[in-house]
Image (cartoon, rainbow, N blue to C red):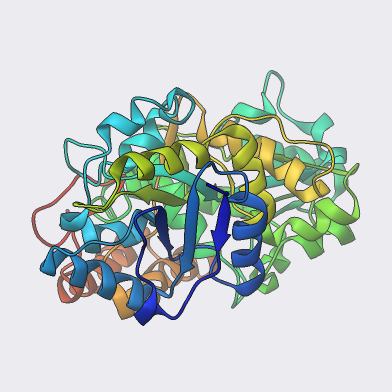
Length: 419
């Protein structure tokens, strides 16, 4: 049989033949990415794949409809971590698949997320994006004595920031705290997990108080223009900032324009580990899929290191396996890719996934963290009073959404509790 990739038909007429696998995905949906998936990523698969990217609404509807009627045509499902809980009951266990993928399962913290709070693997980690630290190489001589740039603690970051201020005469650490910046992600995915092992449940309390007290002290050596920064590649390029945090896509310009001037490195660690927020996409198999062996074969193919690199080129998402990146990749991919692998595979890695189950309340949820930051750090308000007040807002939102806890908080039967 000739290998071929069949272009998608209209959803209503996309019925799989006996010899093809329908790969149904919320990822690589833009036309350019979808074409790259078909023509570059899937082209060498030993079989026939029909790649059908979809928006979230139709994606969920079709899976649930096929599951209800027990007339499943889909072979492999691709989605973000936070999208899988909505279709968890329609997924087949892939314990047997993860056992055949030692390079993927080597990252136990990420693999565990794919169990979705159950005892069985529900999806296979496929690809990831994340947030990183970046530094101008001029800042490296001012690292604290004995510090490892790839294994920093938050205390070392604070000392580094102070050293830079004293050496240069102005604060050189920066954060994207502008109106359209991603400061709330640093608080949710990096500070809270590292200092409290929580995002929601321990929003207030002794560990949270210590975290905010630390960050208030650190802010003295943060460039005051951070409140106007929406993305950090620009202040890095101008030299206003020498050390910064941001999403890898928002550091891209600095890495591409001056690849010899900058490095990327993992986020720091604190009491509970190296908190970080991976944006994880996974691969799953629906129950009663027409040809499960073929679905397993496709997932194994997509997990191969060489195919993971092709997927990176097609989608901009980074590999889940530890793989040497080729030199022909853009500078930003090579620079960020190494740091992303180090961060995800760190022995103290503590992933904090994007909020799950909030629906249209996600913006209000993020605002709780942004408002807390503004009141405690920028307005110097009483830490405990602010945390108590914002915890009430947070509880109201969580209860309205009926959102259960997500990692790193412990699983909950009902709405995620707040201590």
